Amino acid sequence: MNQHDADGSVPALRTDRLGRRYGKVWGLRDCTLEVPAGAVAALVGPNGAGKTTLLEMIIGLLEPTEGQVSVFGETSRAGTAETLARVGYVAQDHPLYRDFTVADMFHLGRAMNPRWDQKLAAARVEALGIPLKRKVKGLSGGQQAQVSLTMALAKRAPLLVLDEPVSSLDPVARLEFMRDVMATAADHALTFLISSHVVSELERFCDWLIILSGGHVQLAGPADDLLDAHRLLTVPRATPDADLPGRTIHRTDSDRHSAVLVRAEAGQLAVQGHAGWQADPVSFEQLVMAYLQRTSTAATTGNPAPAAEGPGPNTKAVSR
Amino acid sequence: MIWVSWRQHRSQAIACLALLAALAVYAVLVSTSMRTAFSHDGLPACLARGPATSCETGIQAFDNRFGSEVNVAFWSVLLIFPGLLGVVIGAPLIARELEFGTWRLAWSQTVPRTRWLAVKLGLVTGGVIVLGAAITAVITWYRAPMDRLTGHFINNAYDYEGLVLTAYILCAFGFAVLAGLLIRRSIPAMIAAFVPWLTIRLVVEFVFRSHFLAPLTFVQRCNSPQSCYGGSGLGFIPPVTGHIGDWVLGMGGHGTLGLLGNHPGNTWLYQPASRFWTFQSIEAGIFVALTALALGATIWLLHRRASWTA
Image 1 (cartoon, rainbow over the protein chains, first blue to last red):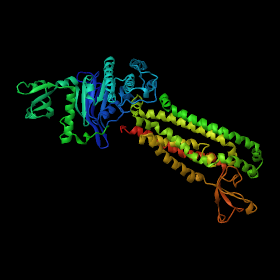
Image 2: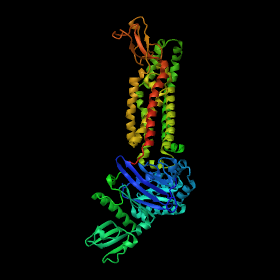
Image 3: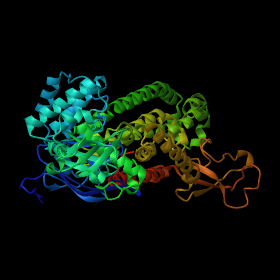
Image 4: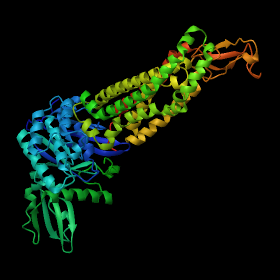
């Protein structure tokens, strides 16, 4: 079964009303999203937003309670070899067997993956200066992350899912790792889905953005389009939301002014007519923070977030 | 997958081989002198000549010299050893993956996790069987001269020879694999598996074993109470039935139990030595069935349980 986009291309990843319940609590619900082939997509959200739950369903480790996942048009079935073969995965904290050498890890990769690319794996660690005979426990955190990524790449899967790949790395290693991911994505025409709660790391590298919070998708789409569609308005404090253009996402009131992040069409943002109003483009981080703060406000005041289908009991962290 | 399983259990396998080697060295040291003494005392010739009762002196002398080494309580303490071996091998099999998060690595390769488990269980179970058989062979060889006198029903022989030793290890292994999946941590899983294993092991030995088959009866013939010899249990060598290896359970029948001492016409209940392999098969069958139950539950749970995120 192929599911085509409007423009005829098959998305690398599509989830359709995907949900996962743990006991009575939904870890993720009604999650519909798409990542086009070739994208480097950032999945951001606070801890407990349902990121790991979503990723585990995408790679076929976790069976959805409802809805479905398709990868390059093929519907996934959790725990089957066909589904597992389509997605490369670097789990959080990049787990490896500590008493294995790097060569042993690659041997494992070869033994457990029919399309394993030993040349790619060996060349990659050589370029990174990681000795094949070194035991995993003798590698730095950054090197372990690289070995994990190398294993996911050598699996030769068209979609790669990285769960918090940089959260345990120091800033230099983070930068190097992300640069390396970008170069690889370009070289091998791969699609990446990278989850993180460290927003600033992703800004430079990702061209697709998915914001997940409280078990729901808050915002998803091409990063540039999303940035274009939002403005940070500075308005006099007294200005009510109703007078503002577009939809108010998050508002911070100070003594005399309010900083309001709004989602609006280009035409709605003509603010020249309003004395004392100012409209600025938003940064990746501002955008993400506005959506995340909005959901936490909605959760504490009991107002459902407009994009979500009611917060229900699922705003609590359950997945991790 | 076979390589992966081997690589992950390599150090365990080496440790087991070392253990086996140590046991073999000990067995050779003790058994050699025992074998020499056995033939030197002329016991084989005496036993071949006639009823075991006529070799009493030689038997007592041999038992006095080696019984303390071979039949002592030390071996009774060792009854926990198959259990320890089984849980140490079994508990980390799944628990270690869950403990260190490597399940995410192991189960996201192009091998479904049930297949991953099936291959691992197949290989490690095979290894456990080979190990059990090897230990059994070493101990059987080591005890061989003593077994000519005691038979194989005595605990120190029965529990380490034949089929049951391997079955004990397998059972503890199976319990520990399941406990590792449920508890997700190796050391607590070892304890959680060992306790029920030991309980079942003791209950089977001391409650059920003598009832595996209905005992036979033996009517004692002797001229006077003074010359009537015998008692229940395996400490009497040779047993009252006169046939080495018979397991005398106690007196049965009517009227004689209230009398002091042994009397002609006493009826004894016993399990004949020839039932050794039947008994071994029954007892091993119980433990193998428990193993299959535990491992079956493990596979089913691993297949069914959808979420592994703690």
